[in-house]
Length: 96
Image (cartoon, rainbow, N blue to C red):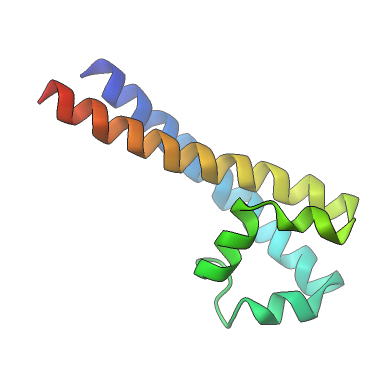
């Protein structure tokens, strides 16, 4: 059970990092790549299209080093959150 709680704590820390970096990346997109941001829809923060774009690392195709510096931590944090929640759920089912 300790490992399940530890994985859950990692998921929380990943979510906090995502909440810090993803809005900054979206503001950068608004300022420098507004056409791309409009394609994500009206609320890009939780848009499935935007999250798929982030998780896939498609921001690297824009060749914008500033965006890379904001989107890479957001991407790693989102992957960390997703994988830690899966691990926590699996461990909880094992220990249950």
